[in-house]
Length: 277
Image (tube, rainbow, N blue to C red):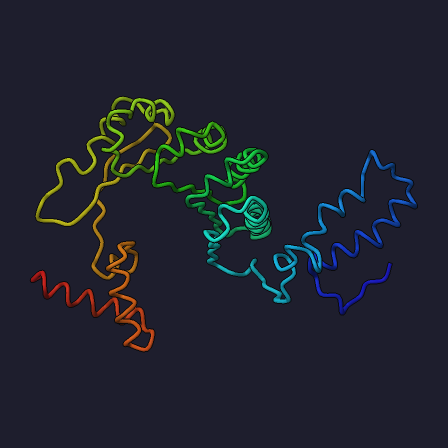
């Protein structure tokens, strides 16, 4: 079989390979349909092939080397409720990380899954996540999952089996709104009475003259403590999620020819003068 050096790797060329070359191989090997139904396989792939409903998804002509990128963000909010695209894209993202995890030796790797419960709660994804959490440490890597709602964890047995049992480090923010049902959270996370008291003490007696928030760290049931997190104004305005504050930064940056760093510095300095500190 000759290799076409001009061939551009894409889903289209993969589909054509399966349809033409691989089909001939199966016929030559006399592979039975009950062992591998290639017609059904091609039927499943067809929507992603040229002219199909989702032919735009896997056929970009841009050749991206994600392996060498140090920081990658996948924003999938636009398709999070799409029954077909969301699981496909999620699996592709996970495969990208596993590829980096296995190939980049001696380099720390990290994957952070934020608000991705719809993806990991799907049938078939539990074993995938479980494999990731069990394997990542062997390749000098870390897997982190973030959620704003503890209910997400409580409601998903898949999350418990896949993630909680394989996570030695747990980090919790203010849990006062779960005060009356914290027993179930305590049981699920395997917290001791001491750790429960620590968590429920978060932000209960902060010093009024200082602007900070407290956070609880638990390390494998061996060590736990509550720490205060206090950042500079520059850091605050870099990471704030408050819409009015984000708009303030964006509007000033626009006036400064898109210079976000300068906008943040100017806003921080003006706030310091305003606060008198």
